[in-house]
Length: 596
Image (tube, rainbow, N blue to C red; front, side):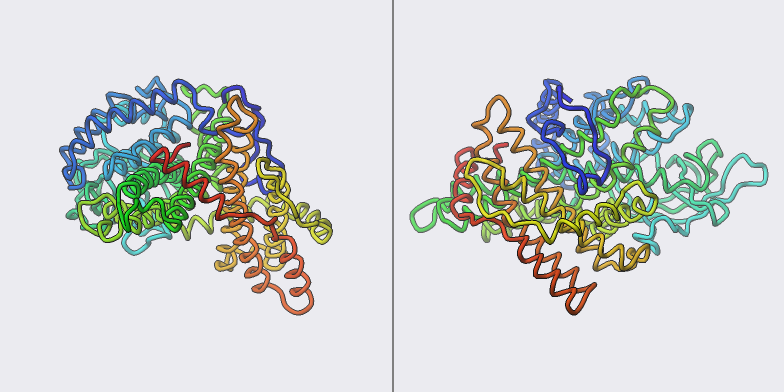
């Protein structure tokens, strides 16, 4: 952790605990090893992928397998795998760097890579027996074997833990007969290993390792997709596939533990890849804006284009800050763990489960930031952005899937609040104590009325106020609905959005504070401005969301009293965001890219 404070905060606890910038990991903390990995991937992408052009965006399973072997030889597929099984056994920061760099420049191949290294490898890496790990991990790490993850079914969709696929134990007890279908499976066209899920005897949801060449495994034709045309996406059919009992993965009836923990890391990696893609789109947009002449000057000199550039940069700063903050939290949880030990996989899964709220936040915020940035890239390019063969058109199509897979963003919004409800019920997240404290304080809390230009004191006070508002709304919802709150999906969506805003603005604040207190405080000038604008805009959204939530739960005098309090508290100090956005845009235009 580069000498940082090793004290860790449990998942979701940022809502009720004060967080110090000293204990937060940021990109400014990258080690020499982190930078070397980033450079090696950039070189690989320049040498092996960018030169292929359109070929990367066309399904070619032989090419995909060739590139995966080369990536494996360089160690990129084994970042999360222990050395004893042929992996590199690096930290979760390195894992995010790999995903981000592939997202930046590898096009459709990025999906092939992060599906393999995430949900196409982690099930056995985390939950496999020693025999299973020895059999499969060296091949998955080297790229000799390609992994796929078969969870989604044609008739089931997001209700993935209630599959129609069944596994029946044979009379001799030596194997299961697997029957059913899985849909939308990435890498299926050339995979060797399928991590799939079925109900044993129609009851016990269980994970299995299936080899694709086994008798009874068949594939549909390639799907014709909106984007990611270079990835293989097919459906599997299992017809009395004989799966040896030793290929059951984890405990019978505990397949959800395997699936959800693999998805947690997968969501984190999707968020990282989205940030890489968004950075690439941003760079292309800025470059074009500097070159495109209209009315006698580059369009980057026009105010409305500057506003777009600044807003894209602010979203990127927040997304990047929260992603590496999350990676640092997970890694700190694993500090001192022998990754080659028998308990390493389970301990890693526990860390991922602890921070599943943060992983879901990163997936949602990262994919929606990418969508925002690529949409604005199209707009800056104008008509040229809509034409096939130009970067914006491809980026726009490829981005859309990221809000759907690894759990739709709607499902992930439910995960955020439902996890807090479950932890509150178990007593591991003391919501009602925090709610009681907030109820006493919120009426007395005074709005922040001033903001010093080069300091973040006002933002420190504003984050505390924003947390109080969010806890008040969450506590009110829990008090009114209890465990039944999970049925109030519209309300959950509102509260999840408030929680995400908190994590985003706090992550940006902590990173900016750390930069201000670092060796080069002058580097913090633009991040401080980005943080101020982010807070100003976010507080307005939090206020609006809080109003919507309270109007859905209360009425009469109680509602009016609480709305009056909310309106008073969400007022942020006067801020010339137009001038700040211009300064931010000028910095990005000067560099010609995202500069942090």
